[in-house]
Length: 373
Image 1 (spheres, one colour):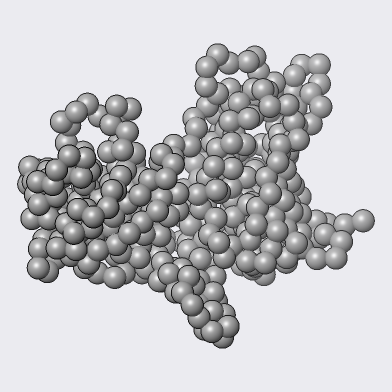
Image 2 (cartoon, one colour):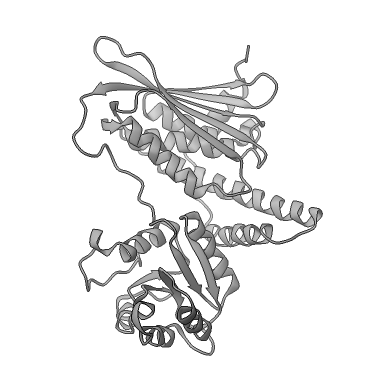
C-alpha cells in the first residue's frame, strides 16, 4: 500500500508564512529566457545541444513557477471563501481548456477525467477550487517532460442534507521537482485547500512518483438555468497572426504567447516586410511594433490599409512601450484597432486580441481600445 509522505507537512509549514516581497524586474527577463529556449528547442539540434536547451527551458519554467507561487501565496485573501453555485462540468472544462493552451510540447502529458455526473451543480468557491486544481496539475507537470500526470475530479456520496466533498486526485509518475522544504507549489496548494475548508493528502506511489489528493466541502445545489459559472475565453480556432518587430526577443515572446493561445504565427522584422507579408498572405490579425528601421509601424499600417479588399481590412494591434492616451490616438488614427503595451502581459494581450477579433462581444464599433494599465 502507498504510504503517507512525511515530507508534505514540512513543505506546507515552510511555505505557508507570508512570502517576502518579490524582487522587481524578474518576470520579463525570465519570460524572454523561456521564450528563447522554447524557440531553440524547436530547431534542428545535436542531442547534446537539445539537452542543454531543454535544461535551460525547464529551469526557467521552474523559476517562473516558484515566483508565481510566491506571488499567489502573498496575495491569498484573509477573508473567508464565498460559496456560490458552480457547474461541475464547467469547472472541469475550464481547467482542461486552460492546460490545453498552456502545456508546451516539452512538458509532461496530462490526462484529466471526471468521475462524477456531468450536470451536478455545487455550492462552493469555484474560483478557489480551480486555482487549487491548477496548482496541483502545474506542480505535477513540472516534475519533468517524460512524466505522465493523471488528474481526476470526483464527488463523495452526499448525505441527506446534500453535503458532499469535491475530490481532486493528481498522480505523477516522476518524483516531485523540488525538495520538500522548497516545494512552494505544495505550500500554495495547502494554503488554498485550508482556505476552502478542505485538506490535502500526499502519498508515495508504489514504485515511483506521488499522488496528491484534495477534499473540499461542498453542497449539492439546484440545477441552474443557462451557463454554469464563468468559462475560459479562448481565441477562435486557426487564428493566424503576423508578428512585426525589429527585436528578435520581442518576436519570440509575442510568438510564444500567441502559440499558448492556440494561434499560428509568422514574423516580419520591419514595416517593409510587414506590408509585403500582408500583401502576399491572409492574416486574421497583425501585431505591429511602432519604432522600426526602414518603415515604422504607423507607415506600415497606412500602407496595409491601402491594400485592396480584405487584405486592407486586417485588424492591426500596436505593440509599443508608449501606450498613453495621446499616443494611442495617433496609432488609431493611422488605422490601428488597439494598443498593447510592452512588456507584454499575457492576460492583457489575450483580452485585447479577443476584443479585436470578436468586436460584437465587446466594445461598440469605434471605441478606443487599449490594454495600457
